[in-house]
Image (cartoon, rainbow over all chains, first blue to last red; front, side, top):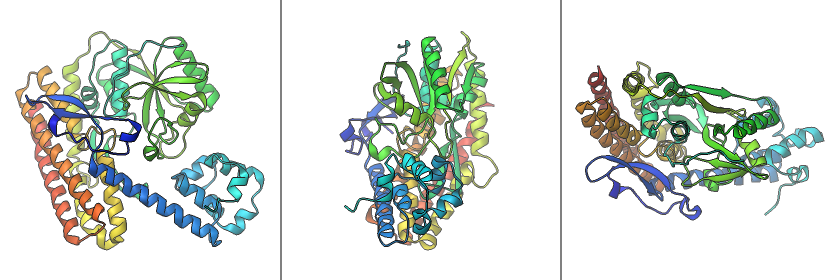
Length: 134
Length: 332
């Protein structure tokens, strides 16, 4: 890639004033480094996966509201976690965490366990029990 | 408390930390040189491991390997430590800072407060250098950022003890012995040979054959998984290839920069020609990303479109196969 052709598109980096470093060739064909504000194909890829996360959050929220899933499900998605990551944060087996996705099981959890989840999500136990209905 | 440390921005975190730490110890070595000697260029497709709900694709070797290979090929000694508790990890880091040793850390990205929100996901193989401490903050040199930054004590604990795949467990590392004269020539040759071996490996999911495998899979994605999932997989692949850290084109441009530097050191004209060829291949990876983005932007997945980019990918794989065979010859 030639230095003049390095894309300078607006991206999610722009608003945070972050620029990334790229390797590109100068007019003599020698390598040099240059900064880029972003590139459209990447921005689309990123917004695509953000949309995906938001859809997952919305779906989890719906399931919590209809009583199909426990709030743990919702907060897991909101923290961009999956089962493996969440299990690792709370220090429990995956099957156990999965069990806690059931509202009936969740309702019987003691405060020690709830606190573990609350810590993993960086919220209070009260917030864990009641997801905001916004 | 602050050590003497100069921050240089780099494309990739691990090369950048290695290069910055070595420069600080008096060994002037560029980021592409670290990447090339450490044989960072790689390709692996792991369909059975899901990252962000898509099959894992990596354009580089495992975290930590680049610096380890550089150390063994240049006869440097690196000390690496992991910790069972945050208190012990902090004590060791503070002791280092007191002894004027800037220290590399493996960290998780999710709690890095200075990253844009959209980039904060659960990825634990990020690297940065801590070069000082104040009453409230640690002074941080993150090689992908333009300037130095800070993290509070609490935040640093969180990123050092992030959980999940590749959990850093407080890992810190720093060079303890850096010889005055290093044999760059033999290290470069070892590095190149290693990369050629990796990329031409006779395994279906690794190197050039791995790229061909992905190309075959892409054709099936829209039928097998439906448009939505197929688009998501494709977007994830492009992110792995182009996101902050690769220097563009799935590390191909950094590698071309390395070959150019190597051609001067080894006095080998052939490597310069190959550097140009690698640049062109990198450009084709960029074109692939553009084509792929057209697909997931329109959210329509004609099978045709998937076949077209699969063809593009296959073409890249074929060219890389020829390329690495030539590269192997050029240094033997």
